[in-house]
Length: 170
Figure 1 (cartoon, rainbow, N blue to C red):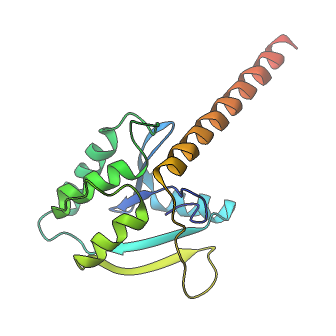
Figure 2 (figure 1 turned 45 degrees about the vertical axis):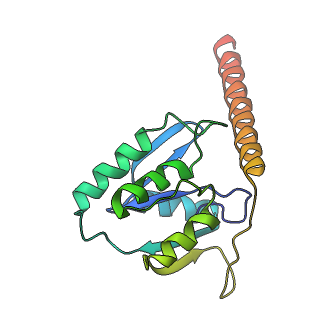
């Protein structure tokens, strides 16, 4: 859970020492865990890590193939298309044979994982205190967060294009 205090936070998954997630830019695949942690540390991003039991039915290579397929299944995070949780849910449905149709947020997913005895431990970065309470939010707040992220990405892209145009004309 990345940017754990945001509503909504960003959700990714680590499989075989690599980070995978779906963002408004599209799939993020095979990001080395060391690079992900280094970026998190440099930017002091509050993160919550939830260690899940390894599936006895799938080896590391099969799990890696599955998460890649699950993330690639969605073109990008977009309102009415997918959230960052979408590939994570799909992965848990496939690897652990869970029914997660009614799950739309991380705070709805975690009780399912807990009930199946899949959560081993939790750890965090830049979250103080012995206990952390995930913020709750609605589908409308998720969609608002996606829309805001899309607008911010467009503004940044536009600024970069304008800046590049000034450099060329100078």
